[in-house]
Image 1 (tube, one colour):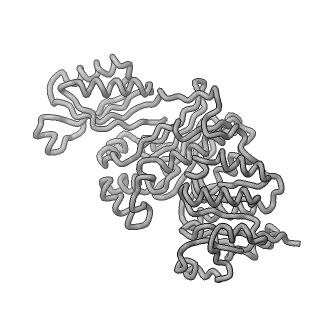
Image 2 (cartoon, helix red, strand yellow):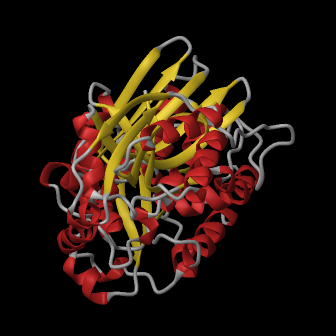
Image 3 (spheres, helix red, strand yellow):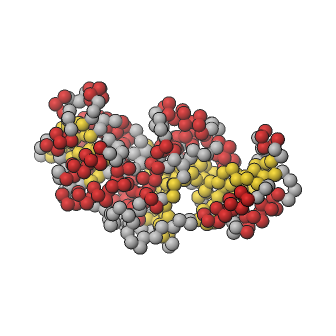
Length: 431
């Protein structure tokens, strides 16, 4: 006998629409393979045009969250609204009513999972959020049920498709950032206001969720170092490529002897690294466990059907598992007392400087780096543009050995105080 499961979908945007389509199109498949009769009982969205466009029967249209929760045929509530306003209100109400919730909302889970999970525990219902991180890539299920035999040591991920598309296009075509962003907006990869993506907030929320799960301790987003891609120039991508590097916006988490290191920033990685070949809007997470060694999960990090795949996967999991799993760590608003976070992390660095084209400049520069305890791997002189030539200056690219972030900052301050050089760009480099 098939188990009947009724679902309510809150929000019919890209993900909500894809979820509805997936459930309807795959009904018979789930009946055959999972032994569940999965149906959409109610849909809550303020756009009648959207409801009609998707062909949703009028008897399934809900006028408010109260109507959804009053329906005895709704077993699971799916939230795909986004943000932390109405979404938080509706999810909280559903959990308090004892309904299992599936959400794709990374900001909601990042900021309020501690509140929501406490309600879920109290009411004995589930809270699932596979779709909140890396779209259709099953990273959360892997952390929960695939690599739990391991102590995860490092995690590096391309977890935002918009920025990866922009950086790939800049790399392949030599286009500048502003031009590429406009193209990404025209194609629907970037929002009208792209701040959340290009300044690294989206990746920061996802890293908070994933690193908390990977390291079994709460990693609040406030503890994550964040830097976006809006200041990246095409010439730096080209210069890095000439030295054998590819530029990506990486979400990096490391469990070290000094503590947990979590950061989001543009990063040069060697062309031979598996993440270097992850292009366009694709995402990937590369992690290392003490037993399994290296693993990489790769796939589409956004889009209607890829993200719906993760949403429906959670629905099926909730429908077929009577036992609910919660966080493996003390899930509170702040990090557990005693948790150490590394702020002065270690990295290699790419510097692009403009310096006076005079005898002795290079010697003074090398001496400055040495005094700040920063060892140089290589220095490459690049042809200057017309402005630089007119001013009697040349661009230099410097790659350093791994050093402390504080040492890099001292170098930058020393160069700012000098009268012969200026820092144009600093980009971190991961092996």
